[in-house]
Structures are given as C-alpha cells and as structure tokens.
Amino acid sequence: MSKRVIPLLLLALFVLVGGCKKESGSSSTGDVVIGHVASLTGDTATFGVSAQEGIELALDEVNKTGVLGGRKIKVLKEDDRSLPDEAKTAAEKLITRDKVVALVGEIASSRSIAMAPVAQDNKIPMLSPGSTNPKVTQTGDYIFRACFIDPFQGTAVATFAMSPKPEGLGLKKFAILYPVNSDYGMGLREFFSDAVKNGGGQIVADEAYTEKSEV
Image 1 (cartoon, rainbow, N blue to C red):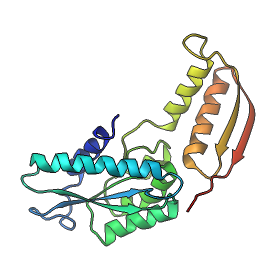
Image 2: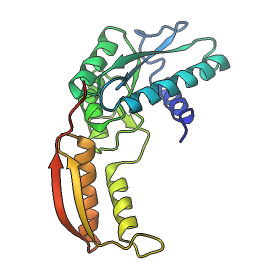
Image 3: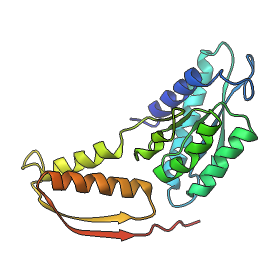
Image 4: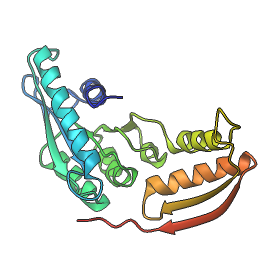
C-alpha cells in the first residue's frame, strides 16, 4: 500500500474508535489529538520517517475535507530513537502529558510490544502500521494492527521457497540467520522454521546475531 493510503486508514480508524472518547485531548470543538511514536532516528529511522511523512500528507488531505464538522486532527510525534524503552517512554509522555486520544505506532514489533501495555492500561487505542509479531495485539483489546502477522508471512515465504518451479524456488534445505534481540526476527524465524519442517524441508543451520543500534 502506498505512503498516502496507510496513514489515511490509520487516522480514519482512530477518529472512529477513539477520537471523541475522552474529553481530555480533544473537546467537542477542539482538535482531535493523536500521538505518533516512531523511529525518527536510529537504525530503523527509514521506517519512522516514511510513516511520519505519510501521516503529514494524510493530515493535509483529511483536515481539508471538513469531515469532522470543522474540527482538525492534530498529530504529535515522538522519536523513540529505534529503542523499545524509548518507545514506552514516548507513549507515556503522549498519554499523560499531551492527553492524546489514540496512538499510531510503532512499526517495529519490539517497540510496539513495549508500548502496548501503556496504551492498554490507559485505555487508549493504539494501531501499529507494520508490527507483525502476534504478541503485539495479544496485549489487550485496545491494541490493533494494519498488517499481516508473522505466522502468515513465515508460512508464505516457506511455501514459495519449497514449491516446485516455476511457481516456487523448489528448495528443500535452508539456513536461518536471525537477530536474537528482535521480536520481529525471532517470530519470523519460528514460523518460517515450523513451515519448512512441516513441509518436509530441512533447516541445516540456525544462527543468531545481535542487532546494534547506531544511537
């Protein structure tokens, strides 16, 4: 999906689910205030910056339509520097200090998992545009995602890799290299490995490494 479409879907969902739910953060005539937690710096900044740019495009379009009866959507951004602890702190700031009615973020599963309990405890809807680890939405009924999950992704990759040519690659033996400190990497490894074994394939090597942030 394009950079323009995803944020429009996110903002529309938040307006419907939580936009007018709390008096703090938006009155019946004031701005609807939403928080965005993203990796604007650090080793995955490319994702956070792209998400922020998309949101800014969507805001301009949505606020011009007047769909909220003259009210505007306002998005406050917080940089988590590509770190889970910073993502949790950013979510706490946006909820307690800025009184947002909903949260967008994070794209990375590890950071969404860190943020989710904060949003759930405060009953603030949170929607991740790209976190595929199943644990993200298992936190509670205020946590949502707008993407597929690791069981689907891992199985799809394994199915394509093992399917006979020309539909697939016709492979049977695989080596896995995964980041041990990433919930996304760990989850994808697990479901890909299971799908390969269930399909009669073989994992000949399974090696871990540690991601290091540039921050």
